[in-house]
Length: 81
Image (cartoon, rainbow, N blue to C red):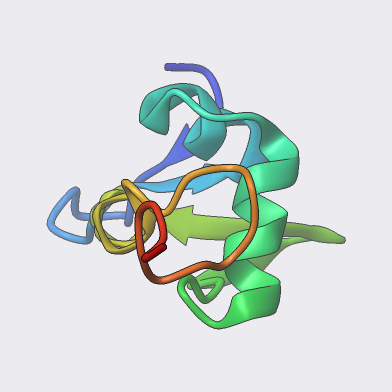
């Protein structure tokens, strides 16, 4: 994985760019940015102007947002009639 960075001893969790995080989670890079905006994900570091993320945090954000759908924020399925 060319976009990952590990700590000098290798004991630190790998940090990845937003693009690499998106690829690992199977989502678009815009989705990773949205997770950050919504507070589901926080950058763990920076490399220049690029934000870096822990993969474990990326997967936690993916789990937290899974199943919410792409059609709004409705908390129910269907309606009563």
